[in-house]
Length: 180
Image (spheres, rainbow, N blue to C red):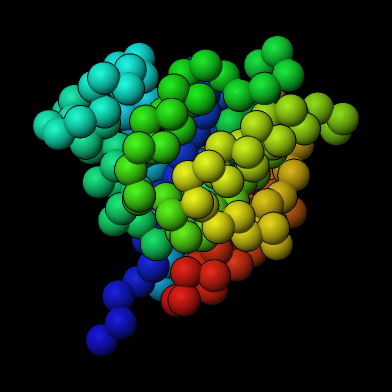
């Protein structure tokens, strides 16, 4: 019996009430039947990247991150853009993946929740770093779903059917790219 693909949801935001978190909560809530999503919640616990520490045994939070990536069939990222690029904390997460092989050939995509005309710097940096780690960017699963605060419900989920449909389809495309 085939196992359901697991898509790891990675947020680039440390703010619990961020629109990026809302996008990933929504993706988790609307995942199609047969696709399992797992939200990674260890961003704040990661130590600052230091190549001297990128040896066995890895710091526990780093080992947990790499294990979560390794166990996933694909990655879906939603990150804000700060000062024209990725937030430092999320770039730090990605830096910890460069020394491993967990992302290599793994179907990866992102959702931009940025307002129209914004977010391209974060996307470009993400594309560059995923290139260094060997991630397989699935263009058809990379989507823009601008999310205003008014779209986010009290439960932190976006109720807009159009947004939900786009996220559901991104998950389907990623799962298909993962061979599921």
